[in-house]
Length: 436
Image 1 (cartoon, rainbow, N blue to C red):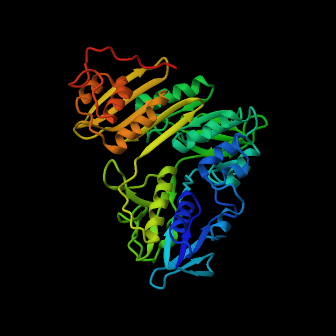
Image 2: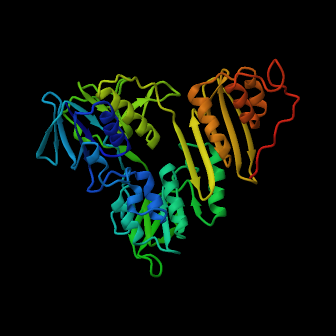
């Protein structure tokens, strides 16, 4: 049996290791698209701000890790698949025959159609080569324009801030992280950034980038409000799209990403997909979606690997969750954070201390949530939403007093009331929302 895994990110590496744990003798070929050992893109910001070296981004630290497991690792980029002949073609010339194939090719940054986007000093922050270019210009005090304040952009912001760059964020949406937080949470995050000395421009787009900024700075970023920002470096973070162009004429069904069934198998026999390139089930909606986060990629890789090796495992769905550390302020969102149809919402807001808790209910369950500045709630919310625990008598009390979340979770998890035999007592004072 020859297992071929196209893509050496978290999904691909996890799948290869999972297959080997089940099939001790099958041949495994892992193909990476870059001339680097398999690494985590989410670790690149840590490399930029100096917390880890390049080897600290690697998914596995032992140099002979793959060799020990009998996994052949090669570099190359796919140019096509013949699903009838069960053949993968890489670099337009090399043919690799497979018995089972996993497509885990991930995604690539979107390059906006902005004049000057290809100038020297304008970079994405997606690969190790990108990071090396950024480090040439991201010096202390250097003016840096970060275009995009979504999840990825906000992670990059942290690295640039820690390098003591003079950062300006330019975001087209009316708030930061608009795809993971509402107006209150996103606005809170923006004010926190400004408090830390980062300039934030929302509802603003870049119209062009030109050479010859003010003084010694080589670039000038022109904005839709008719202002200009001098820059030593411009970092683009406006989104990603799945790497699926090579599937043309492959007979593999695609929508925005690759379509898969409940076992992560594509429309082609013995071909599976995992990670950022595929549309698998969102646990909260029960519908196919692309959840481009590393924990989901790892989960996909494990399940796909099990199914490829004959240990049939259905994919029940992945939880949409994002946890972000922005210069010391932790924010998070889970599940149906925008709310459910016919659901109810409960919230607490402490603007002065950058604290926010919002719970979304459907029936007697929490189906979505947002937090800012409340780290203790992250694990609790994930548990409640992912397991869909019924709140019972706690539901109405949490709508009135969402700060009792921890208390409710303990009681529900132990299947026992905490304030009397019939459930929570609304006359018992609730603990204050923590401010530290």
